Length: 286
Ligand code: DGL
Image 1 (cartoon, rainbow, N blue to C red):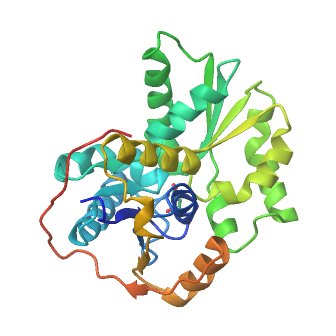
Image 2 (tube, rainbow, N blue to C red):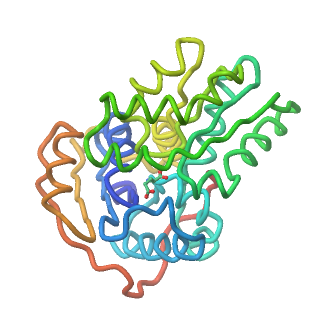
């Protein structure tokens, strides 16, 4: 069981921010990444469609015998995580919303929290609900949660416009309301947004802590595996990596090597939608 891979999926390349963190924290783990590049983006699609895509993503990873699944996509986490856990009760499925919300509570001093994400994630209200639940669990309540959809951020990142004048203009427009609201923590509630950290930080200013949901999810995955005695031992050597995409493999290959900073040797086209029986080892929330 310990030597089975960790399965990670996203609508495309954004989940590589989670993968990079997992690799940094857990060098001995085998990692399997699925990017649904044929159907990206998920963030402007209906709940029914995102749920169906996410089910097929999980089914594919379950078929590869993973020991845990990390939904490295905030949109899929916000919309589909509860349904996925119901549908695949045998495999632990960790989403981004729980870790991001807990990290937000840890980061804020004044209880005023901003959340930026795709239109679907913001529309779902998942972060707002989970942040309130996280505070309530310790007998507190946030002062205010201000949410803002930033639909142009994903295409800007996809086009490599991570630190350019056009991205700064877009960021100034999206973040204007948050800037005047006295928040001291801002959740980057989309896996693409850590790539825009420097622009977002410079627009928001030094008094606002950026909460990286990718870092938070990777740290909770590591803690969960350690807690269940499921870590692959360091003595087993460096873990392998396999990547699957549903389209445009060459483009993904270039972006992934550039972003991860090491060769991507195993990359295959995946066919989603073939029925596979669920199998695994128990549930967690996230
Ligand atoms: N990965 C998605 C997320 O974290 C952003 C890209 C998309 O819209 O599919 O919400």
